[in-house]
Length: 307
Image 1 (cartoon, rainbow, N blue to C red):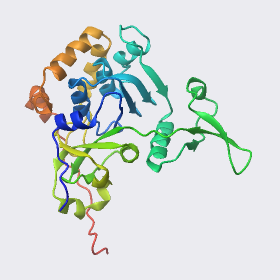
Image 2: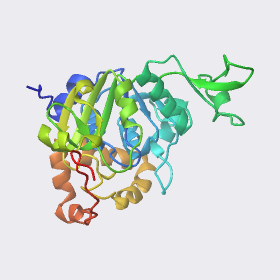
Image 3: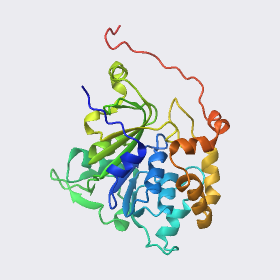
Image 4: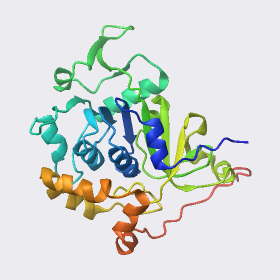
């Protein structure tokens, strides 16, 4: 019988995220676990290194909450809207807290780092840093000579987070996790990490997983906790469950520009909210209904009798 890895968000974060850890909350615009980020902030974890391809609003909120001392990333901003003020203020030393240490790569550089971590490689070679200033800004991006000729390329070190947090549509109690829609590097981050928390919209029977095996991107054998948290990716989106809350991203712009406004937002929506269920209730049924997608049926496959 498969061991159940189901846990509450509060317990999963308390048990698996520790002060000083490197934490990766991945998902490329889609399936971003804001619920996990809020719980980390609510529990006032400290001195974290936050890793992510696109820090997005969730890391702006977490850094405003004081959880991080370092950011490892590729691109940062409020997609389609503007900048991230809390991160900028920490980088530029505008606040009493220590300036935020940063380590910047290209998107592919971050993917390569996770891939090297997942494959237990000492580095990953890539070409994409020629004629850029990133190797100057980040000495961890290093030129290397090919062992098979005279060519010089660049290499990046492996990234092995202490904790990877992935949001998905569904998982079994044993942790077999299924995703459809836009993928980022969730799989690579999970395999590179020491500990993995999967946050899902729905817990399903193992028979459901077995009936559609190609959707499984993370096997239960590497998962430490499965958290069932409907609407846990809001304001990002979950294909088939709810759309991206574009209004939230627009509203965030004036909030992030002002330190008092962002701290007030954290008090109202994170510290004074007991959990994600209370956050969802606070959003209200009308806001939630506006984000429900219409039907978009796809084809079906018989895995046992292909014609």
